[in-house]
Image (cartoon, rainbow, N blue to C red; front, top):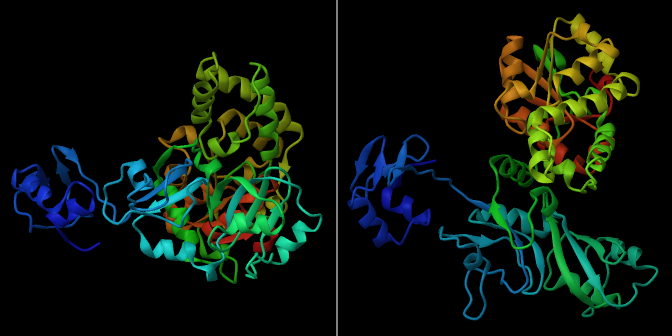
Amino acid sequence: MSEMRADRLLTVSGIGTRSEVKKIIRAGRLSRNGEPVTRPETKLDPEKDRLQLDGKPFLYDEYEYWVLNKPAGILSATEDPRHRTVIDYMGLTRKGMAPCGRLDLDTEGFLLVTDDGAMVHRLLSPVRHVDKCYEVTYDGTLPEDAVRRFAEGIVLEDGTVCRPADLIPEKPAILTIREGKFHQVKRMFLAAGCPVTHLRRLSMGPLSLEALNLSPGEFRKLTPEETDALKQFCSGAALPETAPDPDGYEACIFDLDGTLLDSMWMWHDIDVRYLARFGLDCPEDLQACIAGKSFTETAVYFKERFGIPDDIETIKSTWEEMSVDTYRTRVFPKPGAVEFLKEMQSRGKRLGIATSNGSLMVNTVLDALDLKKFLDVVVTACEVPRGKPFPDIYLKTAGDLGVIPEKCLVFEDIPEGIIAGKRAGMTVCAMRDEFSASQEPRKALLSDWMISDYRELL
């Protein structure tokens, strides 16, 4: 990022108009590295300078990315003389902020708002075929051949032929399109003889309301990890033509559940049985909400979200009791995992585990499967300040192995873990897993390679 005039920096950040921020600067309210900045033309480097405004840290991002679960009655525009816009609704003051695409006034759901024009172009360009998924409530009955007609490219009332779209024809229907014609979804259903009565966008590209956990009307900034995933998606980065060669690395670090072991299936069952003890149903979004959290972080989440009366240690102890027998008798290594561990050990590679799981469960399954003999280090997320998608656990594992991050090859099965490995500066190989099958497109974009069997790398 290049240097920027102090007045422009504050203006584009939405602090005020050019004249207003000049008054702020001349009043000495902005400081750099502890010294007041009093001249509007002073050049600042937001990446290197420690900036404060009114004594509080002032952080500047080149671009901002906000997501909104848009309610009906709000216009997808920057300004309008008759209707309240999403910019007004969200109270955004930063220059250049605009919605990515347009939802009709009465349409609800996912909307990205940003000042990154290049990203908006990449997401909306018809040649990129970015998925946009909608929940559609409609009158009437869809024809028996509706799925085929939508898949082949339904013809609108004016003769326009739409690109192929994926239709799940229940009520409400789920429709995924890869273009953005005017009133397109409504016109597609009208062409099928079924007027739309309610429309809600569920997702766009790698971002979805469910994963973002946004209730109707809620909005927030994307996290750095979510922003990274969006940028990876928009870059169109594809997996390399050849898999990473383990001989190019000094260490291999494995996530446990779903990566080294075929075990993710058991956790949904445990969640259902555990919540049933308190008369609670297991919500559909639970796994997405706790993905990557450490064992302790997950216990805190359960206690706060579900009002569990037990203390954190009791919650963890109960889960351990529920899981240990399953780990001992019904969990097995992923295809080729044991062969890969043996081979890597014979080649002198350092081998480690970096897992969000609790230590008792980890030790139980490693003992039961006789895997400890291959491992130099086992690290759990409870040993580091932050769970995945933060890089803490991978950095600690590399440190304990005595290997620099660039020489570590990571194996992961969920996006949060892949992001953690990449943010640690490591090469990441994604493992296919039935539990995360719906996330494979995102996993492919985030990772350096993807496998189904460890023997693919031998």
